[in-house]
Amino acid sequence: MLKNKTAVVTGGTRGIGLAIVKKYLENGANVAVAGSRQETVDKALAVLGQYGDRVMGIWPDLCDPEAVAGAFAGIRDRFGSLDILANNAGVSSRTSLYDYTLEEFSKILDINLKAVFVCSQAAARIMKPQGGGVIINTSSMVAEYGQSAGCGYPATKFAVNGLTKSLARELAKDQIRVNAVAPGVTRTDMVAALPAEMVERISAGIPLGRVGEPLDIANAYLFLASDLASYVTGVTLRVDGAAMV
Image 1 (cartoon, one colour):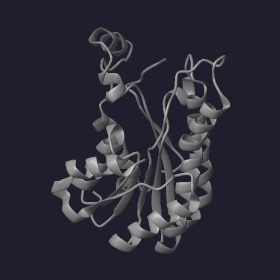
Image 2 (tube, rainbow, N blue to C red; image 1 turned 45 degrees about the vertical axis):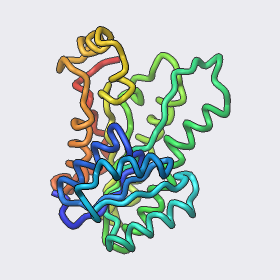
Image 3 (cartoon, rainbow, N blue to C red; image 1 turned 30 degrees about the vertical axis):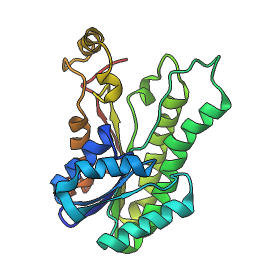
Image 4 (cartoon, one colour; image 1 turned 90 degrees about the vertical axis):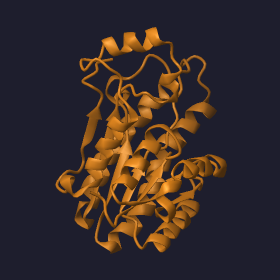
């Protein structure tokens, strides 16, 4: 589905991000795995060794426009294009408003929102002269419902939804589609560490009767990146089993 395409996946070293990387590689894309540190990127590349020179790693500061632009140009130079950007990097917190520091709030804003802007701008500047591309942002179900603590996370994801819709309208003339995926509770490392009875309790509140798997989210990312979604832009696609918080 993605033969001869080149993708970069931020936050691609584990969890949902690594599942997206694998799904893209399985479907013929060349992929750049972006992580926060070289050591985590190298660990992911070791897992992906079967894909040989179709996969590479980068670790720029995602809030540094020059670093990101340079890294993305390197991807284009190596593979010949940059067709898909998966803005998946993100951090969360459960800190109470009473204890929230401005430093913690700013960190979440930087990684969850500012980095999406910086990476989208750098990718669009490459995609436009190529004749188009795809940008997909990781949102969250809590952008719609909020959460009981850690207000910075849902606030940034709500902003990501707005950025997605706005960029979709602005970049449509350049044939760049922009969408978002909003995962529900997904079996990442954090959920896997929870007691079994807690996971069962969470699952009971999801109409489909289970928490999501990283593959469920990766499949949505594959659809939106592919030509099957050629007339889909400005959408935030919920992948949450119809869960209600």
